[in-house]
Amino acid sequence: MIEKSLNIELPVSEDFRVQKNRFLPVNLDIDEVIEEKVKRISIVSGTHGDELEGQYVCYLLSDWLNNNKDKINGIIDIYPALNSLGIDSITRSIPFYNVDLNRIFPGKKNDFLPSQIAEGIIEEISGSDFAIDIHSSNIFLRELPQVRMSAEFKDSLLPLAKKMGIDFVWIHDAITVLEATFAHTMNSRGTKTLVVEMGVGMRITPEYCFSLVEGLKNLMAYLGILNIPVVNLKEPVISENGEVFYLNAGNSGLFVPTTAHYEIVKHGDKIGNIVSPLSGKIEEEVFSPANGVLFTLREYPIVYEGSLLARIFAFYEDHK
Ligand SMILES: [Zn+2]
Image (cartoon, rainbow, N blue to C red):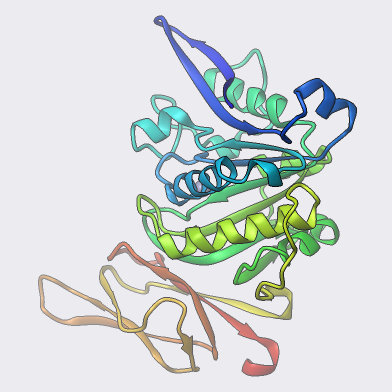
């Protein structure tokens, strides 16, 4: 059932809208669902208008649910485009305001439009038992499918992430956690919220999307929201068991990788070159600082000094 869930009037006879597709257990209307206290999960995406992997995930999941209504045991709300203006105009932030929606939660009612949007989203999704916030990096970096969480909420979130067949779980310590994100606000208010990062901006990576949909179905089976068997999907690698290395450019130029994304690399292996289109020279050779997995790799070739080129995850026993 497609519903308008948030509507804010814009200055000149237009509306800002967020829409959701709500799936309920068959044979129960919403009053009965509330009375029986069934679990509710909200799956959101499109906070950043240039991230499209989540759009395909929402389609695939809704398509499966449309064809398997008898398996639904809870409330499943799917919001493909929280920043609907951004999605429609290929803009990462909220257009005109140039504000990153994921940096202004929880927002306020009597504030400028981006803050009103944030407040409306939190109001709408509050009360969900669980939420999944799907991101796809940006146009610059390609990411292996991963769940990110703050150490503060690890005890409640890690068991859920392990059901999702995801490759990597990155637990951030308290200092690096941004409190103005959707996930932090929701987790602080009791909705267990997982952030998924995968793929690259402005593109879809079908195999990642298929895999995440299977993971989401398995998580919902585990939570009793879908009446399908829980299966053993692959266990994620967890960042606590190793160290994340950042590779940054020392020079400006064109970064040309020589290693594929998600390859296992050894200390000293070549990752790529930074070349100069003008001089025809290699400005910098980039090598791996550790034995590990290349889980982030630069997709957009132009780099400046300091640009992030890659991230490598190394298990402690491998690089000591
Ligand atoms: Zn994002």
